[in-house]
Image 1 (cartoon, helix red, strand yellow):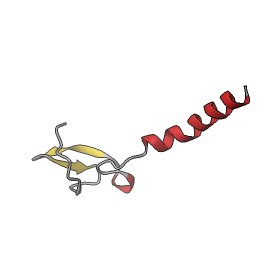
Image 2 (cartoon, rainbow, N blue to C red):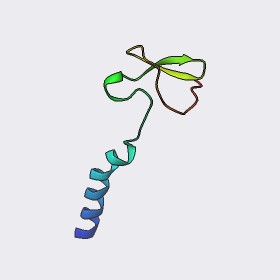
Image 3 (cartoon, rainbow, N blue to C red):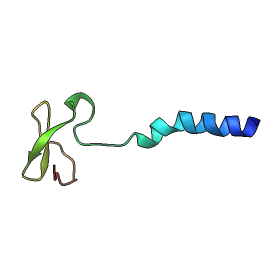
Image 4 (cartoon, rainbow, N blue to C red):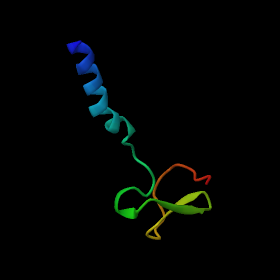
Length: 56
């Protein structure tokens, strides 16, 4: 029972870390507003330096 509790607790604590990833316009940029020419336009008006192609 103790091992099961430890496994559940570990997964609960580590799950947010697994979802943490670099996303275009993250942090102070406020997220993605829209696409322009395959580039991500951030909500603060700047163009993301991401190498990903925006298809939104």
